[in-house]
Amino acid sequence: MNLKLLIGAVMLMACSACAEAEPAVEETGPAHTYEDVAAQPAQWRTVAPDNLVVLNTSKGRIVLQLLPEIAPRHVEQFRAYIRSGLYDGTLFHRVIKDFMAQGGDVAATHGEDKMMAPMLAEFTVRRAPGEMPMDSIGPSDSATMGFHKGFPLQAQPAFLAAMSYDGLIDVWMPHCPGVLSTARTGDPNSGNAQFFLITLDGQHLDREYTAKGRIIEGLDVARALRKGPAPDGFPVVNPDLVISAQLASDLPEGARPDAYIMRTDTPEWTQILSDADRDGTNICDLPPVPSVVVG
Image (tube, rainbow, N blue to C red; front, side, top):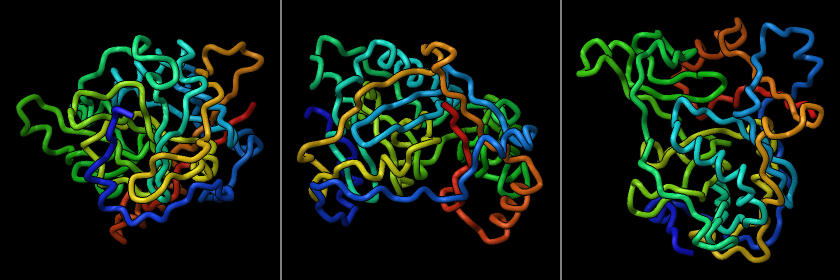
């Protein structure tokens, strides 16, 4: 394996070896169904099919929602690898208990000649506050955490935009449970095909790796993937694999899943965010924004 993901980070992890499959872990937060969506449609938003990814794995289905606004180059190339079929048959070759599951080694499965060019890092993005508005924890002009389209975000306070050289602020996606991010070497601009899924705690990676999406169905599946030995989760004995990866937009309409994300500007979530502000709760310690996938 030529990618040495998170070398410094894994040395901080006290992980137990686990080469066998573990029972699925229950997802946090209340379960919702399409009946909830149909009963209160104004409280939900739909996911564009081009931002909806279905990973069929040997452990079950994982559905991802992409956020191209936060990492446009990385999302575009992730879609290109999916559409090429090159993720099909790739292994989850590095899996660390209570941390992450890494997969997508296209070179190992299909050959180096199938690889696309590495990408410039998108650890943060410069945005005007109004371009990526957050339902924030705390006052909107000074908040540093909140949700955008269901994604956890962190940012410089909005009031700094008026004092910055370009009228913009830095925004990034923290590595909360369920976040999809990009593997790399020691070179910050080496992200390519390999990806990883945060299964529990990964905020020490913030602004050092390019996050680009999140799991909206199947966090329990990601947590149940076969683990590698401590401390770095490699090699995995009899690893799980991606059977197929598909964009919903490439599926026939009758076979295309629909995804709904609960809005975070409702009275219920306004109260959750207000309580988080009062208690000093970190964005990654809040329950994930509920989602419903149909089909």
